[in-house]
Image (tube, rainbow over all chains, first blue to last red; front, side, top):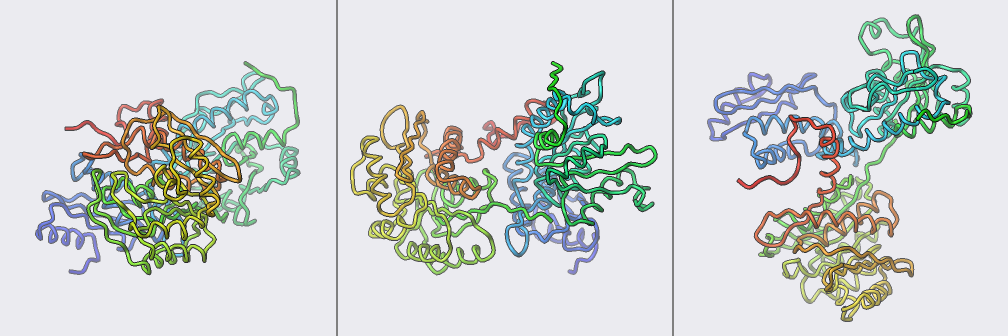
Length: 305
Length: 289
């Protein structure tokens, strides 16, 4: 039979089941649409998996998916659970494929495992960077009114849950900067969004820090040869403004598009109700803090502890 | 916009159907170290942890094709060779590699850990004349070093002497592995640039399977990650400790080494510190039912 719709997929699954297969997964990647739907037919029931389409010509996707199902079966999961977990496993494997050749992109079966393996290191890095900000009084004048955030993403990051940051941000507390909480994954919205946007252009730039805008500081970054970009919130199209949390993504994308460069520093002068802000980007949270310190006026190294 | 590069390595070796050695071990090792692995299969073995039961060599022209089409497309930064089986395959590999400037880690495989011969007896000499001189790093064990250097090895001084001799045959760096010498410790010797580096580590009491494959693959992976020879060998030595100590007891014979042991340790660190009761422990072990 020909398959053009999800109903066709279900029908095909039933037919293949009648041919003797105990469970059938018909994969819908080759059907058109913004989402991809896979159908599992097992024990007379259907289970439907719908996921956003990843725009990549993958190599090895089918092999990896069936191997993942076999692996979960070997780990004693039942059929439905094994297929469900294999479907989840594939999302990162496809989204973070290895661009190694001139043709299709081999899927990356280790993406999720390397994310897990990096979590501990990323948290330690954000914690160390936070201590540096608390311990160096140079930072104090630049702590933003809304709080300063320092954050770092996992190597294969697609959501804010993949970005570690300081819970409650770093705030001015009397004459020193203090972190409100500990480093935790998912603790940042704004800075996380900036990192995820920049990583699309440079996957190694996984960390960022936001600071109160200061013209001299911007000049100091430029003097050290940093790539300093900016965007103007007034130019943001109303349809973007209407969407919650899109401004920073838009602003950073605009700055990159306009210059063709990936920033070390990106700033904006704010607008009514929006504090002017500098964001410093780098390969790790410590890298960002050190880059920033290198451009700040030296002050006595007050240690609050 | 920023061009990033995925480090790639290649293994030219035999397939081990039990998954513990050969191509299978090499690809797991590359993956565990964050290196994209490619491969050219030289022979298919019907093998388990107890022995090698059958060998089907791949025609040399097909071995050559595998290497060529990969190198045309993918920027491979380091390679390793394992089981090369016959003079014809060795020559095909040597010729193909000569046309590409590829750093090759040579594991001069004569026998499987279980004792079975993985090279045609009459072709041992060809390994010495065609493959040894092309090695960027060569990693013989005691027996292989004895065969290549044409001497008996009983002491660390003998190992050093053999390493020098193999270096003179053309290998840029030589690691003589001392696991088959007796003693509470195991000593490996690296000979490179006229200097020796000695690695001494406590012996792990296990009859490992795939140790030589995994070690040479780890060196190739670290070379692909841009480490220098001495650093790459040092890191591969460290990598092997966990891989051997936490081997996978899956069969009735030898114990396949576990190239993912260290990576799973890393992956568990965060989970243990931020204990989520919904997450089950992730290991590649489970209780027997």
